[in-house]
Image (cartoon, rainbow over all chains, first blue to last red; front, side):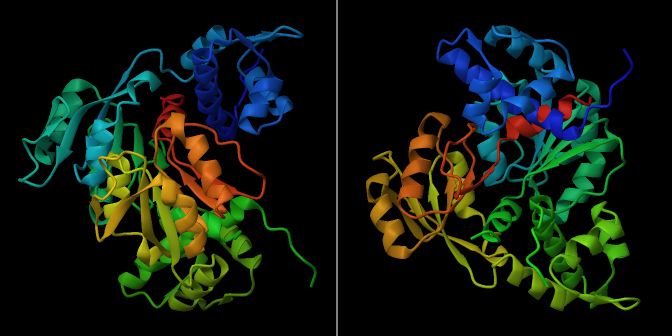
Length: 205
Length: 205
């Protein structure tokens, strides 16, 4: 078997499959099928089978997928069998909401450090964390081997913050600032800008 | 000229182009090129020219694009020359952050109504708005002709809320709840689930 190049769009659907498997598990389902998953997700069963086949044989013709087993396999593939430490930069309204959000740990992520550059925010409590100054960012991220970060600072500060994160060893950035970051090619970036998502819909209205 | 079907992925890039044109404008640039835009966005100049050519001729060979003119054209295409009224449902930490976010109006959107089902939140101030009970949602959305909504409620409540929004006339939903909504085909939905975005990156780490 040769090395298969897996399209990003296929990798991008795996977390959606995993999320639905968790719901099925919560509902008490032991077994599911590409038909059932497809129906719940608005994705064709053929597409789901093809996507999963990149990674192995997870179900049997006629008997479907074991919900817990497939969950475990997807967690392994997505490398979230353990919990990633996450640095959050920016403790404004959004940063506060993210720091208080309880939904990350089950998904494989735990915000372990929060940074801001505002002296009035440094020392504030974020859940059971304490907001630290950005001047400590490089040292703390390096020492803790943090690879994942969330940027929730204003657009004007985001590029500098992101570059500092990368210089400290971060390789994956979830960027909430409404700008396109210019970073080295090996860094993975996902952007969440609600303005962009809203504009993508009004075109069709 | 026949009717051209424009791929969703092309439409999806227009807000990114627009956002960058606004930055260029803020920096004082009068004219730009597909090379400059591409360099700033990490998108090939050929792709940018091809995307824009779906909608018309916006630049001249050798002289590039007029920054203000192209901005205006993109706003027209994306139907954000006027400001859309937006209903926000859910006034938890995230809803509060969204209600306080000052970045929507310049992008073509204004949160004009906020709803929650928690009696303790109804009547609270959200900027210069007042949180209303969800029992008033259908009436208020219908009366104000609101077509765009943001769902920021827990996963367990999101499907019911989204269906109620659609029943009231909403045709575009920005969904922050970590579930796949089941809605009629004519409704446009964009999903923002940070857990999904983070998992899409750890695969590559």
